[in-house]
Length: 267
Image (tube, rainbow, N blue to C red; front, side, top):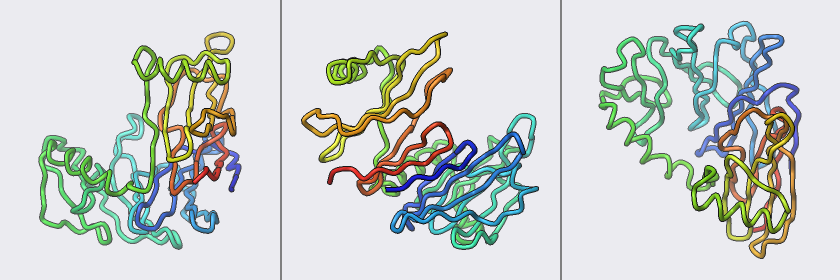
């Protein structure tokens, strides 16, 4: 359905559950440039947000919700400590608000949960998503973790992320046996698996020379018939997670670190 080569590594992808847009952070370390994009999943049109490039290298994508991208800065650049929250409109890249002294923790039903990186043991604050203003609600660390975790299934009810099975776990062995029978491959290290009403989607690793790994994605129907197989990467030194996700029957994944691909699955 859609393909785009960013010519640089896609560092992070976040789905805005309210607009259906996908936010992407693309980093090019050779020229110290970071670019942010939004992808409209209804029309599959891609838009680069016009943010100042000088500052953008020291920003990163945290999340996206209600038509807003939430970016972080860095309190300690050497340690990579996140500090500061900037709200950027998905529509035109304009800045809505900024809270420089807090850091992003997550999104709950009550709003954006933030903490003070200088006082990590202090209660976390809940900010209004649209304005960044304190709502007056504070949470303990346990309460904050629970609030974000409880809201996640509601936010992503139309989105399916794969389950990660590690080598040695029972489900890993079951899916590895299935891949061996269907594709004649020996999966190693980890497998990511998702099942829809009509498809099985599996991301798996096989060994290459010198201890490196190859990551491939296979799409089957429920009868086990292979419909598509794509190489996601090769020469890898380790495994990843969330190598794909499914949103409204569309399969999204990154190929060779910098190419976004979208396939339509069987309904």
